[in-house]
Every structure is written in C-alpha cells, then in structure tokens.
Length: 325
Image (cartoon, rainbow, N blue to C red; front, side, top):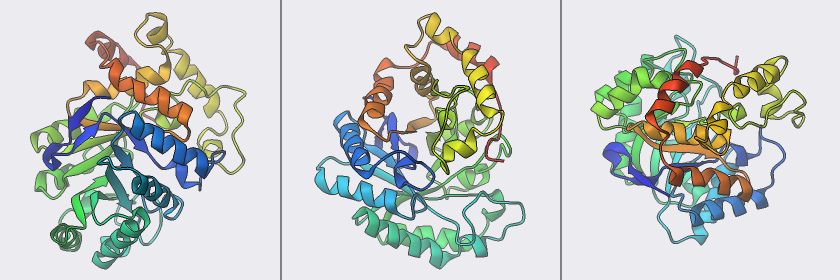
C-alpha cells in the first residue's frame, strides 16, 4: 500500500480507503456484520488507514461497526464521517435554506453522536453529507466547525460534493474561502469532470480530495450483466433498473481493451488505478463488504498509476450520467 499527504490536514493516508456505506445495512443487501468486521480488519492488515463513513449509513450502524474494529486495533486509522441533513436525506435543491438543513446546533449534535458511535474522542474529518454553494457565506456552520476544532472533537472540516457533472463549481467557493480542508467528489473513468475545475482549485489551496465511486456504484465492477438479479429493496436493484443493465454492460465492454492489451488484469483494477494519476487525489474510497473484495481492491495501489497514454485514451470513455434521478 502506498500513501499520500491529504492537503493541509497533513494526514498521511492510504491511496485506497475503505468506503463504509455498504456495511451500514440499509440500502445494501446481502452482507452481514460478521463479514464486514472481518473485511475491515483485513483492510487494515493490508495497509488501509483511511475509513469513510457517515452518520446516515444505517442510522449510525456503519459507524458502530467501525468503532468495534478501532477498539481492537492499535494502528492510527483516519476516520472521515458526514453529517446528514436535518430536514431530508437527499442532495440539495436550489433555494434550500441552510437553516433547515444544517443549523449550527445540528452540526454539533451529529458530531457528538458520531463520536459516541465510533468510540473516539476526536474525528479526523467531519463533512457535510450534502452541499450547495448557496451556503458558503453562512456564519453558523463556520462557527460550528471552528468550535468543534477548538474543542478537539474534529481535526478537519469539509463536504461531500454531490453530482459534480450537474454542478461543476459546487464546493469551489468554500475551498477558496479557506473554510474547507477536504472535499469528497465523484471521480471515475466515466465521470472525469472534476479534472476540469475542482481538482485544480484544490491543489492551489492545498485541500485534500477524497475520490468516491471509483467503480461508479458497480458499473465499473465488470459484474453487472443482462441477467444480473439484485436483492429486492436493495440499492443495486434501484440503481440498475429498467434498461440500465444493458447500458452498463455495453459501456463496460467498450473498456475490454484495458485487459486485452495488458494494462490491467481486470476492469475494477483499472478503474481503481485511474484516479491515482491525479495529483489532487489523496485517497480513493471503495466499498469492500467482505475479505475477498478487500484483497482485490487493496492491490490496486501497489500496481501504481496507469500509463499516461492510457489516461488519454480513457478520455474518450467519459459518460456523464445521473442514475440517481
């Protein structure tokens, strides 16, 4: 496992991080807490020292599982979590007042809940789960973040930026204001938009970037086929509904050259190595709900960056899409 400095935080984090949405047990089906705990331990054994979670993942269940593992480990593990909106759990629509979504006391209350769930005295990174530039000048959230830092309850503050392909400058004003230490963005072979804007601004302002959805929620796993059947009520059933399985299957076939020409042993490996070529990216978080997933995903860091000519060829595979709609 290789490591990178996460911007102004100074955290030396693993290139592959553990994405803990899937172990929350709400939308993701088919896993177990026992598998999740074993997978977390193996990830740490293989050098992973960064875990991304959220209070909203299983109403704190993801954080609680992580807390159990942290209690049994002596290594320094960096933890990032997120604050859910108080009003509704979804991306921000234009005109949404921050007073209803993230009042100051809510930010503090949620941080206290996460600290308890995780069994920690300090959270390394606290983030808004949803963000809009319309909130950048509000004083309440800045005061809450400053207070939590002063009290030693958080080390850094930022936001998870939703759907950058629909709002390419989302998060940039907050980065430039100096109030965000870290931003989490969607970045993968299909969704390369952050290269055009937020990566450049983050580098200029020494803000760490957490790249999420490197496998595009499974579209780049190579496992979604025409006959794929997902558990009833699962996230996958919703995300890959109707004609989408065919579309995802066809798009993945177009990337077969990565394997045929020897650039990667599998599509997931190529997809996980793709973000490594970006200097702005500090860590890549990927879901790993069992030990098998952990072993294959963690190896991507040691394989290193893809050749630059491959990165250039992959520009032709950009596919801006919104399967959450």
